[in-house]
Length: 143
Image 1 (cartoon, rainbow, N blue to C red):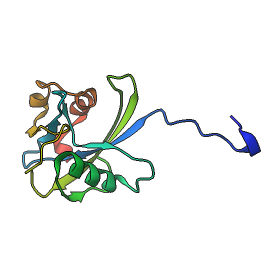
Image 2 (image 1 turned 45 degrees about the vertical axis):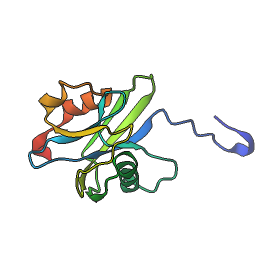
Image 3 (image 1 turned 90 degrees about the vertical axis):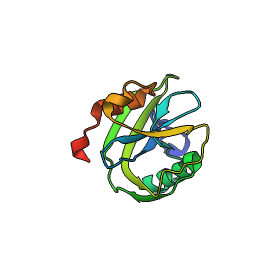
Image 4 (image 1 turned 120 degrees about the vertical axis):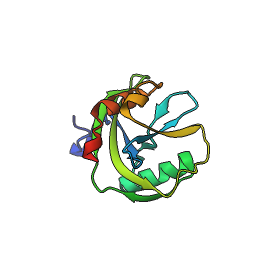
């Protein structure tokens, strides 16, 4: 599709990209946070326009949602998935293994509660669709 001055118009992105912090405990259970909707989600959020990298996104989101500092974020993702959200929009999630200083979080609408789960425990909870997909992919022996 061409525009004035022979410039090519780049179409809008079809996926909202969300960067997720995969925080594990000693037993390799993963951290989920309970939002004000009553659903469980993984910490993290949308990659903002012109944000430099995934580490910036995770650091910003962990501070905004939970008031927590990270101590390490992997360079490469552990998991990647795409899904259709409840509102009909498509989203891509990129999960990076992340370590945090402590779990003494500050409550917010995006984090009323934080808890570590096994796959089996998580599936008994009210999960966002992306977390249901993540649980199906998660392999404790991989991390």
